[in-house]
Image (tube, rainbow, N blue to C red; front, side, top):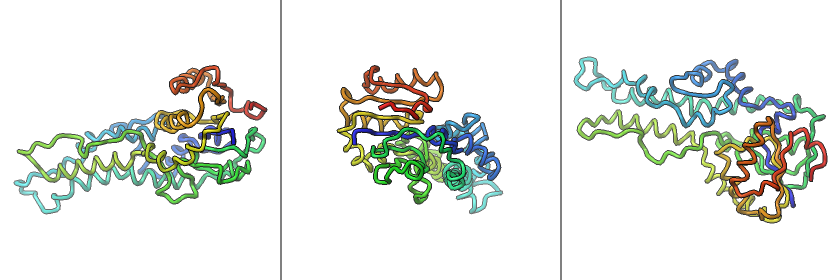
Length: 302
């Protein structure tokens, strides 16, 4: 197999699948008011209007605002209003808020994935010219390659899972690895176990919403290590986000850069400069980078 295809969400969108984060936004707005209000709460969560960056936004949750909204539960031990329940109410309030962005948001995302009716929406007239005997690295959660192109499942690695997989195999999250267990210093002289427990809740949120790309790569290293004979790499509909750079770095490490040609689809003309820079920074010679609109891949290009 001398060809490798890298498949992103633009591939599904090209075929008429309503799989963008903007589509996800619309579905959440119609079906889960609580989650929609949380994601559009600009004091806590900053995301583009079309939610295109909502995974990255998970890393920038404003934990200071979250703490402030829960601070009424930090009742003084000397207060006449004190009760034993106040030992736990602050951290439970933190869990309630952060849980919407971690646990509930992923649940809703998976619910939405299962509503994607690829049989009803797939546009057969937009099928591309694809070598079905090649290897495929797919970042998509759908199975269009197998179902409509006839690519054998054994040739496809769904690196972040697909909708038919168990929920815990669906990878969703940001790329910031938080090393520390707390986000603010605790003064030993005014130590309050509730604040300490609350910091652990905040840290657990950032940890649980982290997408461990390096570990995912390690778990699938066999796929990458078998790319040594690849001569052509075709990138269809992938946005080349920074969190996915680790996979491209490994691909570059495993191939012979002096022999491989890259055929890359773009959506907007402004993407051409961005994509050329992305691959050039990986050491790819510009003369080996061939940029085309995705519709041009209907014709012979290899």
